[in-house]
Image (cartoon, rainbow, N blue to C red):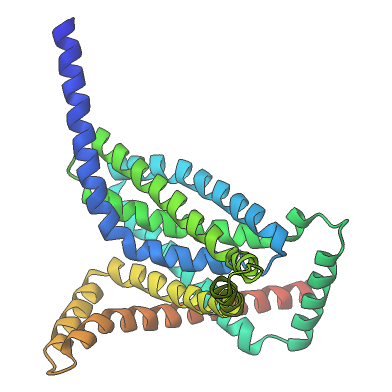
Length: 313
């Protein structure tokens, strides 16, 4: 019995050692998507009243944890029993990200400004009203952030699973759980810090120390620009990540992008920069086109449904 216990402990130690090593590999491979996740979620939870920012981030973080509780077992099950389903599911997720990004851009430049102004005034009035249920008011924002988190989390978990596809189930489970914990705590900890940056600056600006007060005022002035930059980065990340998922899902396109990057890297003087930018630019282009097509298709479907309802009425 004692020898069996020692064998069991040795097995557990070996598994933990493998998990630690492979989690480091998986973390490196998913670092780029984690950066997109940070930008997207910071942009998603911005624009709420100051005393509601952390509760909204916390609500999204809890939704992210629920996402992981669904995604980790689902990824393991699909990998074990339906491995062919991984790529189509990722492609659907990529299309959704492209659609969300294009819809944001379209709304920004082509949506009725009078409607936007009315919505903004209604939002400001509601925020000022202390009797309003602010959790209900920000429900759409929270749901949107959780949807985005679900898709990005799915991609990260699938990438992580790919690094340990030939390992035992215990190692796969340990790596996925480790990655899920790291990304949730890391991303939402940073998001919380970013959305409260202006409060930190305000606190420092009231200090007696001149240097601290000056740095605080600088932070307060910079915070809105940081949030605007994150909004732009978040939208761009939707096209980059979504387009990247779509191109990686088609082997011939993925190979062509790699060849294009290699060819660009051979150009004298600017080869290294072009080699790095080429895949990103192609993925972004694919993401924009795909998002536009989905928005166009959904618009046509809505018009057809509206026309059929009017005809039947």
